[in-house]
Image (cartoon, rainbow over all chains, first blue to last red; front, top):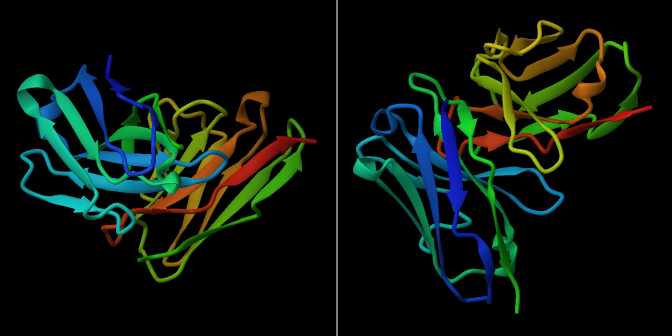
Length: 119
Length: 108
């Protein structure tokens, strides 16, 4: 079964840091570009960052550029998001999602992990 | 960035109804459009890609159409499990990948 499981969310103060992880199983993780997509409470979906299969290509949304760092470890079938200088507006459920090979849509998605930035 | 606008933002319908949700892109995106369904507390689920191709396992009452700037998601006969929020997403020009603001389908 294809599965993505996020972890690492929690409560953090403004200006703080947090590292999210996403563990993949059931597919050849090293062959797929991976992404983080977030959803603020009661709001829509916002793409955050992408990393290609070999980490050669990395992209960020303007809203997180310079503060967040995406990375992956193909040997561990894991995706990461290092979040620094966190702001209240970063409060959201963070989903990891695989980009379909040869396409630009996301499937599957993890169950999400909640990040709350509050003093 | 390409802006995606869905309409309506929310609406009510009854089981058995035929419903249509519209998604408009701020510039032409050919057929590079996907649709997702999201239920409360759950991750989005892929329904349709390439504007009209049904993802494996998705019921045939769901269909998508359109190209260029205007797209529609149609549910031919609403079932109770279809009440959810639906999002469109463009992948013609990225980054960034962009989503519509969502359409919440509620029970009348």
